[in-house]
Image 1 (cartoon, rainbow, N blue to C red):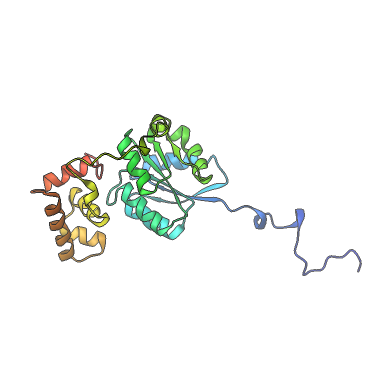
Image 2: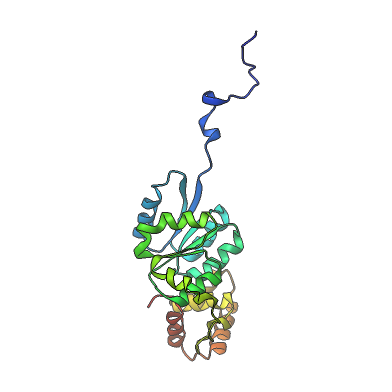
Length: 239
């Protein structure tokens, strides 16, 4: 009859299923080894109903795994993480999920670390002390394809220090190590045995021993103590 709706015709307007028209929420992964801080960051993000936390990670390797499987829009990542530090995790996250944007959290107000963060591919740098005030603003910037720097280091960036010729590395020469060798250094500095390193990286114990020997020889280390000092100086682990 005239005026009757064809049952095959999809519903529109007020009668339509609101869930079908609801925009997809922005997915975010939080990665920090302190549960209390993760909880706090999640509380801040709850202010945005169009965002949702897809997962939380307590170490760098877990952050990489979550990013690779969930493909979040943004990963909020602590620069100092157990098992795999934030710089190496950033590189691996962007290799596995190129569209993901990485916002680094740090307690360090350091030009060198900011430079390393950007070279690793991160788009933002936020001091943990500013996270409560600036986290939402920082993520909004990254979602708009704009970099974001915590206010305490923004002037360093604006002054163009990143465009200056990069000074030669100190005697540590961290650039001499491959990404896998930096992973080995971090794990050894955290006190892992060759067997534990092999288990974490999914390699044989013999391969782990070979990597360890290569690192010690390449960097001129004569003891694990020297390796640990190197890891601390280059922010691979916290002292």
